[in-house]
Image 1 (cartoon, rainbow, N blue to C red):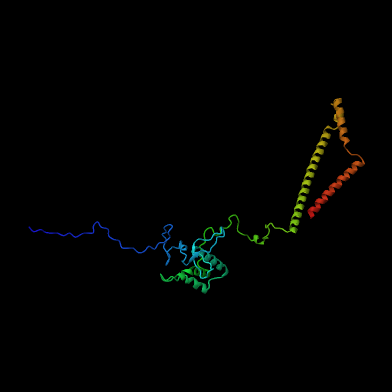
Image 2 (image 1 turned 90 degrees about the horizontal axis):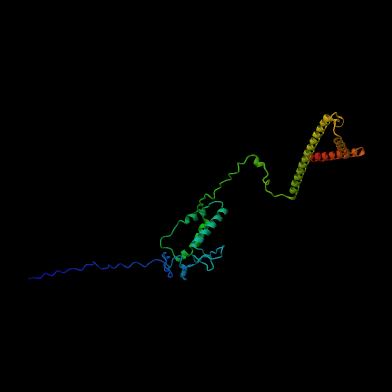
Length: 296
């Protein structure tokens, strides 16, 4: 019998297909720990670790903090001069904003040259044409362009808007005529003396008015007392001594003693006349001083 031979071709099933070799990784070559940041063009490190390469055209940022005196650890392009100042991207942006604000105060408005410089920032070179020299002068170019360009104004936030004073009313016509330094609280020596003199005069007039009020009250009480005494004397008279009802001998002796004691303090003759003249002089002196204060 004839034998039939069948040849089976080998298949790739169960075998690992070789993967084509990928291109060299473009991530940062920082060895202490893995870094996934992309490398800078033509360099082995990213912008964060580029200072590890001593031959790279970068140096430490020249910005020094005014609070703690520490220097910024970020990388900045090396300037053309050896002792030149160079800043990282963040501090270069801050310096540009500061120069921009300063130029806003000094320049009245945009001129032709400033507008051209502003438009030149939108012109970008082709991809891949950047050289180490251009990257070195990038920070200085940003500073120059931002210092000359006015740029767009920053949006005004709610906190920066003027809210006004809700307690104050609108200015009236009379408020324009007031003294702006009326409530300043700063006075010269002459003004202080004048204010104190006016206050003393006002206090003296208040005291005099109070004394007049007390004198009026005393006179009114004296008048009422004399009136009541007169009414009592007319009603009773000398009936206490001579009335038909009469009094007991002991009560009559006590009444005589009381009348004698009341007369004991009274002034008679020349003494009474001098005392009355003294009282009149005092009254004239008090009334004269009050009239002078009122006239002043």
